[in-house]
Length: 79
Image (cartoon, rainbow, N blue to C red; front, side, top):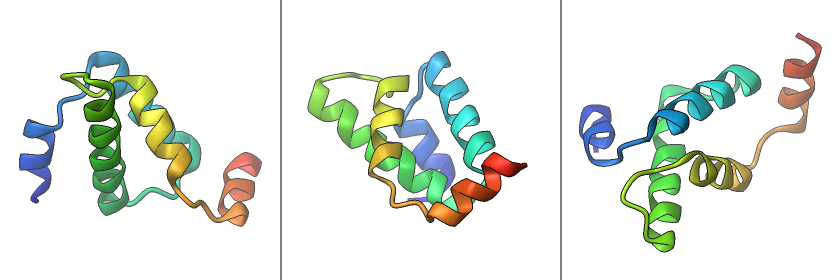
């Protein structure tokens, strides 16, 4: 699914957009492809909860499922 279609079908609320920006800024290990995957997982979480839009909680839960390299987190904390 192209990013344009993904963003059109997997809408984020305003807080969700800010949360996504914060996650990307904080971790600095997200690529464009990994952001798309994160949004897809968050869409699944939102569907399971019965939400029409992806909210901040869905994004945070999806991010918790992501297996992150501990060294990458350490580098972002030092920066």
